[in-house]
Length: 453
Image (tube, rainbow, N blue to C red; front, side, top):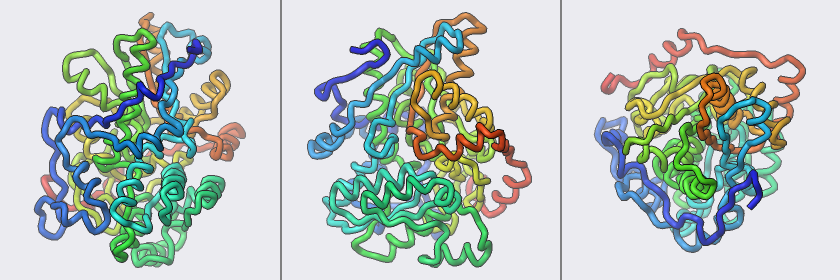
């Protein structure tokens, strides 16, 4: 075992996903049919999802077995290493021990394939020929293109326009794996054309891209929709991250982490690392769990907890979550994967219950931490991941000030090899900090349905 890398063998890899719904302090509120205001049933979801994923979405079982065929696919890149950031520790002069779960080792360079291959596997078994989806920065779109290519399914991706223009190499990666990619909003869908008519120069949003992808799936019997975050079954698949991390920390001689950190866009990578530890916190272990986000899209730190649509056009069920409003279009920051107006209902509930501490950071502060990490540990982090690094650095400096030898772990959710243009903007001193005015939030919230508000 290398000093800075804690590995698991294939035999030690988890063969079950952990479902936090079995251990929630209070039940999750049901998704609602916007037409009736009543909880949705399986038939409402079967138009765009296979039944096995619908079962996982509503399951209250603590453990859900990973199929053998899927385990064989996971073994292409899993178990992922847990690394000790000793050079970063030295640069900070901290007594804290900093670990990071390195999800950048997957073929797509992020944590996203953990759920992409699972969702495509269940769709393939259901006889689906094509999957449509949205993507922000492109991590999810490339992961789903990879998975669809692996299982022989067509993939159609609607990429938020500002990221489509900012990050061409993620688009090229999707093409490499036979994915078809379109800037969103596009003229290919009714919802896209409506948005373009209203604002031809819109930078787009994940909510808009979701509307387009859902519309495509709903209109074709052999096409389903796949979401890269937010939904319960997506967070379930990502739990393999935290389960591996638990075993690796034990190998490293750590009783439990004192601080767990992940960046939050829709909530999947954050949940993947943290959820397997939430039960420990509920059982009394003193664990601080931090979810980070951009100050330009402060869903967890400033948005209310209420029912809202998951997409801009109002095609999805109403879900209980922290939301800035489904028509909210955030500024075109470089962390494209963190520009979603809402948050996973499970993550939102834990924040609402005080079990997760949310933090918002400005772009320059985030890139400052990212550059420090790249210059000490070597790997260039994605701008999204850099939000978690910022919090890890802050916590390590707190430990230095308090002389506390704490164990800090964060999820290195993806590399930034395709984000170098953003680093160039930062290093040239041209990166702007964006603080969302309250008036923008108030305006977007006017369109949110008043249910339990």
